[in-house]
Structures are given as structure tokens and as C-alpha cells.
Amino acid sequence: MWQYVVRRLLQIVPVLAIITFMVYALMLAIPGDPARALIGPGESLDEEQLAIIRKEHHLDEPVLVQYGIWLGNALQGDLGRSTQNQRPIADELAIRARVTLQFGIIAWILSAAIGVPAGIASAVYRGKAVDYIATVLSIGGVAIPNFWLGIMAILLFGVQLGWLPTQGYVDIFEDPAEGLRHMILPAFALGITSWALIMRQSRSAMLEVLAQDYVRTARAKGMREGTVIWVHALRNALLPVVTVFGLQTGRIFAGAVVIETLFGIPGMGNFMVQAIFARDFMAVQGAVLLMALAVLSANLITDIVYAWLDPRIKYDE
Image 1: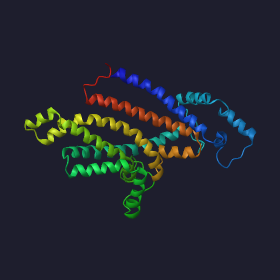
Image 2: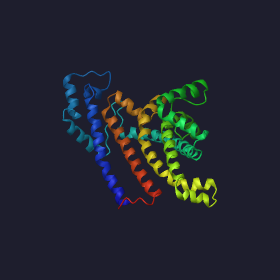
Image 3: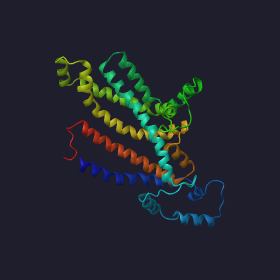
Image 4: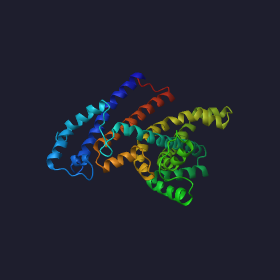
């Protein structure tokens, strides 16, 4: 197992390099002068001063050279300074990542807590009302865009009923009750697609497991139906679902860009949107690096958990 983990960690390095280089090159390809973006709005400099700025920030070098300089600094923990507030990007990302992590974990827990039981119930009561209702809801969850669902949730629960706040963020560790109230709507809007996919995968996996011989044998021995489902069938049914859990990490980060902007949550997604509009190259690059690292780490953890759930899998062989 440890040899596999080391190999996967080594594979992460070139993947991160490719992702960050592509984003770096695309940001430079955006129309406009990067030097003017660095000085911020409202400032006016002549060409000689702009040339000095280009030289200081290596903007007059080829793209590969610029990327190499950024990569060398990033390996030392220096992601540069944001042109929006002149703060170190690493410090800014540390604050924003804490917000997105809380937000994403709640969305992920909601998805799993609803999706897995719904999928199991749909499989156990196949062809009955529970199955039809869960199937229709899962199709709707996949088809409905999360930003539209977020807007509808704001109008219903925030504006019409006034039950939940629709904007802002409260740290859960500082005020758990108020923090959860602020997170319910955005976490629901973000996690609805993940819930639908997890439910559909759980249903398919459970149907396949319930048709196996050992499940029929357990029932023939007179075991209670609950024991058969939750003890004998569930663990094997969770194997393919674990893969879906890992894949949803990337979906949650992608959705956070829209949902955080919609609900005014000061997380990494909101930070990236602001940085893109401000042409804050270093901030975008740092956010992409952190998000890519999180997704790759989640995939690695998923593979490890998969091997733990299924002893037949031997990665070192």
C-alpha cells in the first residue's frame, strides 16, 4: 500500500505542473496589458514606467520563463501578492480555504446523508412508490442547475418565508448555530447534484448486491431483513459509491465558484471570480494550485478507502 501511495504522490507532481501551466498561459492570453492590471484601476503610467513594471515582474520574458520563475517561488511557499489588496496570496488563500472547506464538507455530508439512504430505500422497495419518487427527484437533481436552485431557495426560504439568511458567512467554530443557518441554503444548492448522482449509484450498486447468492443465503437462514441489508449488503454496495464520493470533490469546488458568488460567501470560489475580473494573475494561479491539489488528494484518499473496504484489492501487486 505504501509503495502505491508514494507512486501516486509522485504522479501528482506532473499533473499539477500541467494544470498550473495551462492556467498561467490562458491568463496571459486574455486581451489587455498585464502590467496595467498590476498597477490597479485608476492609475495612469507612461510607457517607460510600464516597461519598468514589466521588467520587475518578468512580463517581458517568454511564457515558459515566467512560469518557471513563478513555480520556483511557489515551491518556496511564495505565491506572490494580490494586486487587489497587496496582501500575500498564501495568507489570503489560507483564510478563504477555511471558508470553502467548511462549506464543502457540509455540502458533502448532506449529499451522502441523503443520497445513500435514498438509494438503498429505492433499491429495497424497487418498483414501489418510494422508488419512483426517489428516481424522479434524482433525475431532477442532475438536470437542474445549482445556481437556479440557489436563486429559488433564496426567493422561497430567504425572501418569502424569511427562515434562513441568504447572504454572508459566519464561522461555524465561532458560532455553530448561526454558522449552520448561513450554510444550509448554499450547501443544499451545491450538494443537490452530488446527492442525485450518489443516490443513483447507490441504487444500482444495492440492486446488484441484493441479487447475489450470499444475500439469498442470509435470507434463507432466517436473518432479519434489516441485518441482511445493513450488515451484509451495504458494505459491498458502498464500493462503487466511494468512487462517486471522490469524484464529487471536483464538482463541489467547481460549484463553489458559482454558489459562493451567489450567496456572498468569502471562500476560494468567490476569491477566484474576483481575481479573474481584476486580472490578478497570481491570485488565480494560487487558487487553481490549491484546488487542484485538493482534488488530487481526494482521489488518492478515495483509492485508499476503496482498498480498505475491499480486501481483494492489492495495489502493490
